[in-house]
Image (cartoon, rainbow, N blue to C red; front, side, top):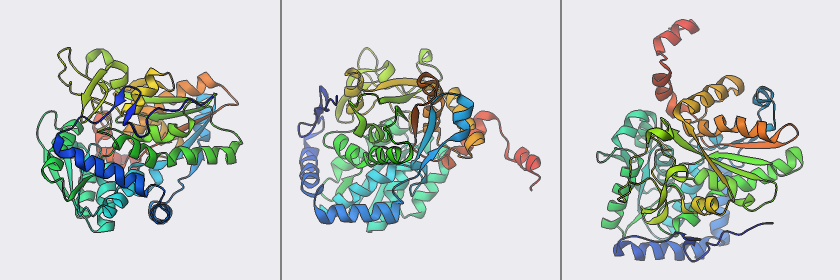
Length: 409
């Protein structure tokens, strides 16, 4: 029995969501909402989006049987939804493409974005280049340090990367700076928010653009094993890849939806990004959702080894799914994510993003719970090129030692 999520035009998912922004931004949000309602089903818009999704992004992305993981874990059959093979290397391009089409139709010539892991920044820089738009991406200095390859990619695409030095110098702070820019330049600028966060209508727009993932999973699963999956597992930071994979299955009997947050150095340490696990309702960046905060309401700094998961809140629709038991949410530590990373590398020949590695680690538990004869899908939300330096540092791998082992150099 399908239970519908309540948000359509109200801007809320149950009690979560809303539009908590300066008055300066209300007109821009109303303009965006009007444009989305006007164009979302417009034949020319749909044709352009679908053509570029096919020819530029490379959709549909593959659906792969993970044979060696299935054998090792000894439970359900494990399948990978390969968003890492989309152009730019992650699911982020699905949202960026749809939003650039809206920005172009609204006559916006300047694009801004925030980024943590860099994948949304690269996706935004990519579509801005495709459409000839000026582009500025805000990125925390700490994330610039640990995601240097993506910074280079953005600059090669013609985007200005503005370092953010406030706070923890990570995703939350980059988002805050992007919002300040938008307030000051609202007439000619469109802000491509990278996840299902922010003020309405962003959570709904981003979810709709990312739900191509779940619709493809459903079609590909029916073709490959003749049924819907028994479980879908995805990592959750802001939550766009997860909500995209989950959305077509919400309320569907027999389909478990499992989001995996960042437990960082351990929930008990307070150094984590597990908003749904340990947060409480509060307002951040324009919407009401679960937030990591002090008793006095001050936002706590999040931590994760993965730059895309160290955000101290989560999309409001995920908060709604949690409170209504429509999805399950767990958390995985940095050390566990590294284990998931190396396991995937060595058994399936795929170097996954550290964000995705959280989902891979927990998927073993789910596969064993389901047992043989069931089917489990992991959304491989991004590739790990951007993370190899972070992983090498965490595991104590020296590149010179690698050369000696391989016989190269």
